[in-house]
Image 1 (spheres, rainbow, N blue to C red):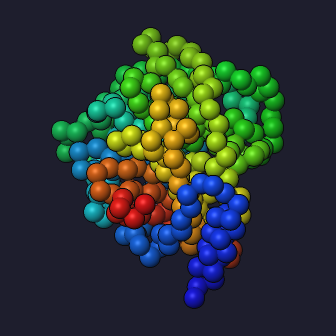
Image 2 (cartoon, rainbow, N blue to C red; image 1 turned 60 degrees about the vertical axis):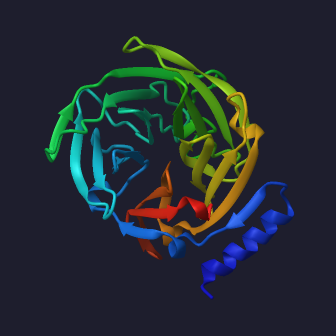
Length: 301
């Protein structure tokens, strides 16, 4: 038996005994299709599905570009440059029809005052390898309960964010809380005026026992991807929630494996029968994993 399989079993048993939440374990490296992504997107941080293709991007310091991927082999079909946009720390994308929202809200130090969301129209009809598209909108936001914007030090803040979804005309943000391995759900109205500033309203919190790095909402089920500081990758599934509060229904926690083997799990998208998970390259002296796309059957969850 592989070492990580033994670790998965031990952690699963410990979690199950101490939690009323439904818990499961899956070996993502064995049950999913695994595709190595091009090095050009070695820091893939989110993923979206549209018209039988996947869209992803690089996070902090990358180009202000979205990459359209072949859904079968992960190869780049198209590079979409976004005019008048800057990639400070892009961390997530989400869709409403053909409108793509881009979350430039990575905030590892907790001191950003320029948290930004961009939106564009995806150019579905073009077959050009390289395109440039204009912004539809750009707006800023702040968390309503963040009062301190001092540098908190690396990976200590509870106001980092890497996950959001669109639902019923609003954006729902989920924080990456380094301080306590929980997440808080914030509700954000989308301003119509370009350059506006909005307030993200605090709705609810949940102890995910890991930092949340991506989210997907599909047919009244919410999915999270994330990992622990010691490198365990988790997927969360929420259902039967009511009144816009995702955490008042049923929850299921699924241990997927070790990030050292899987890659640093960052993005998730759920569509029809499949779940798509992307992971950043990890390059350390003891282990190396390339940027990776996983495709698994939703029935496994």
